[in-house]
Image 1 (cartoon, rainbow, N blue to C red):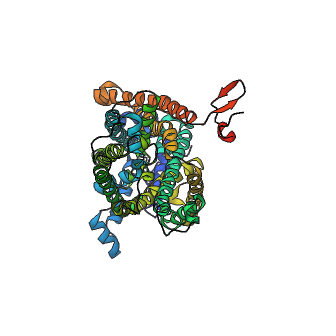
Image 2: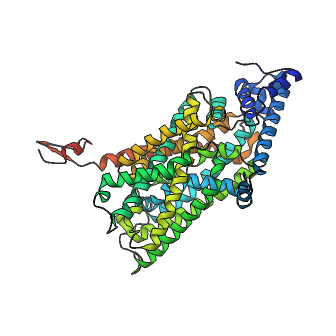
Image 3: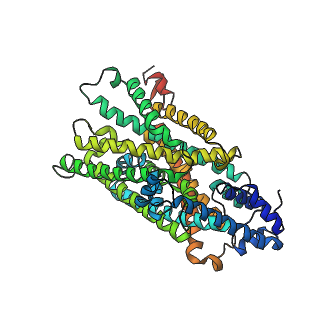
Length: 515
């Protein structure tokens, strides 16, 4: 374990080792990890020797000052274009942070919401949306409190600090699976949009209407629109594009309402609409909501770049971003389900004709932009999880090296997205396991272990809230993952053998024929 510099001269020398402001926070942050410190005095007493309390607190103050200086430099850019961007969407503001959080989860999630409503029923789905939204905001509160106490701005580092070595690697693997699965879902959605345009076009060449042709066009769109956005190091570099992309999602939700009014609801409510559904199918729908709402993976990246960071400002950003997601999810889910009824079992993009319906054509074009931005926002925590396992830090890496890693991850996600047939498969399997762990279990555990977790110190609200968040997360993981696996197995064709019947997934290989 590396010792902290003790004297003022040593402290000054430590500051001079890295004069670049972007690297100083990393140096101080690594020192905090090395000594196992927290910001609060109560937490410090249990981990750090009393003689080092003042030193740790000083390092925390220095770290926060360096972060504030770094954000201030970016809020006063020299470039004229960047100054104009700052007027529209200030760097590190509450609104830009909220749009980044919303943009990281909107997109592929919203296109699966009508299918989730079909699985769970309208009334149950509304309850799920409300409950998960409340848990998301509260998890941001806990994560921000933990970040302020520890002085760290990395999900993996905070986990190692509080839960011990090994727990951070478990988290990193779950984080990688969740974010990589998110990128795969964006590629699947992009493939669906390409199919909607090309397969409904009269003048398109016959080859492009085939599945290989669809995959070729999707790869081209990925190369020129999705891949370049994965290369920036900072999440706020995408704040303007994120804002525009979220506005296109709003347009898409409005188009869903108009299309439902003109078609599915033209002669009243369909007879196959279900309001309450129980059983495994309803739980599978919950898995989709858990996946659609998960944006905690970007919490510390957004908080790191927040202007005048505090629990209150971060909570406001989380409330605005989550409320926007809730409204759009509710509108898209209800009217998409009312429009198509039991026919919507996967992405709703496959049910519209963007060529004949010009309004939907414009909305699909906006969805393309949103998918590109969401793809990049998922790539950031995906690469950070990998860097944590490899003990690397993006702030110290040259641009080309970070780009090479991101390119490898992006190509892999492209190949997976082109050959996985259903988006609900990704959401169902990863929503409960990874979303429940990262979004609810880990925030609750980290808050409990960050120091002085007792009724007197944290109060009834946080005491009950943390345990409730932990319990709900565990239940979601166990039942949601089991239901998702059961649903996938149940969808497999049946294999018939002499004298017996099997529902093994191997039935696909036999084509479901009788033997």
